[in-house]
Image 1: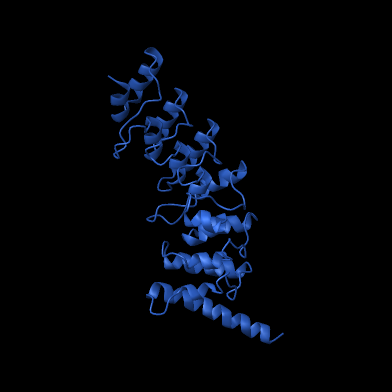
Image 2 (image 1 turned 135 degrees about the horizontal axis):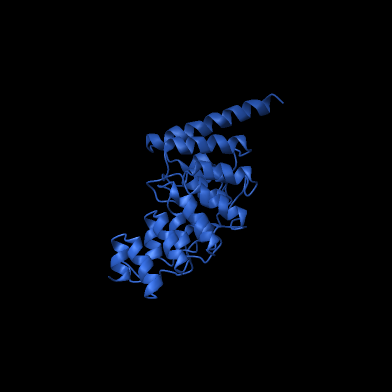
Length: 268
């Protein structure tokens, strides 16, 4: 039986024998369903949340630093950081870091380190990988500096900080963590002069409830509904007239907050 066959059938006993008795390498490539030719068994085990297989491969010498060029220049830690569906991912992330995986790098083809990917989750899961982010912070893997992005991307051009990314994509718990830890502030602006409150209104990725909660959090932390970017636009101005209920409900929250602020100011 080959290493690839044993792996694909989940036969850990056969794999152990191949590694120990026959000196087979744990750095083998396997099919991930996308026809990548440089996707390792370790990457597939992590992608599937298989902690037992991941431990076996790491003990046998599987590299945590391998980069899949066909898969976007990612390491196995990027892959783990992008996933939150399974409870085992925190244990997997800790395990990978213990074997030398670096939350702060290398960067993938879009300029994102694994700790950055923890905030930029897939659209169908709005949580973000908070476990990954906490681990990254504990080893100095994330800061308040401008976030990366591929050359010419909006992230790179605008110079987003972590809080802009988190608010833009509706990551409530990650935003709260960044603010609680003092990594970012609710009034932090990017190169366009936009605050995290602006970021909430820049894309419809994320649920309306999550965006509403973010607005409340940011306002409580000092964000101003009146703050304008370099183009003279406040966050509410980013919502076009006639836009759907998703945006109109969020705009009403800001308009209401602005009225309250104006009332308080007039009483002073």
